[in-house]
Length: 301
Image (cartoon, rainbow, N blue to C red):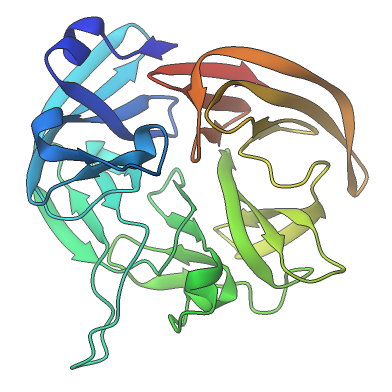
């Protein structure tokens, strides 16, 4: 669907955080190499570490149209990018820390205006491997073990919903089949949000939780495969991927919902143009967007 232009790469631009909006628009945050350090141990794009404060450029691709805006005064390392209504967007760091003096959790989410100017900042919990926004701008997070057991109240539940003022507006409240240990990936389907996670108990496994933001209802299904990196759903059909870490291939799994059970209907090994690492998949209305190096693919459920 899109590839980082060679001209950008030659000029020193690197593609960092990315997301897909509710209308199917791809958004990629470009940051110049001079603002970045390369981790010796972390492979792929997630190993680039920005030196704050820094500037970047947000590329939004809709069909054949490409829009670019400068983004100024980024003060945290953004692990997640998400789109909001009215062309605003959100940058989120995966971690937050508690101030020892006043007990407050440091902000790790910043809302930017359509022109790329910071508007608001707040905290959306700690240790966030998966994040997605819904069609109305609600923010949905699935947390990891360091957040779940790290003392942050909303992170402790494993899954959470937030508004753009940083207020927690949804929690599982004991309605999940087990206690989460780690978020895997996220997707949307119309008004609904799907968060994929796995539990830490011996009787547990991986689950697909479908949340209806307007009512707060949640329904969870056992996942047909453990620990998927990508998930997209349309009606009773789903597509999931599992990566071969830092290699040019993924396992592609198709599944159908039969009653209360997702059953695998097919699987094969898919060769892709670039290396696949963490945070490589996001589902939007039946389309699984897959990042492979500096190339983005779209796979239909």
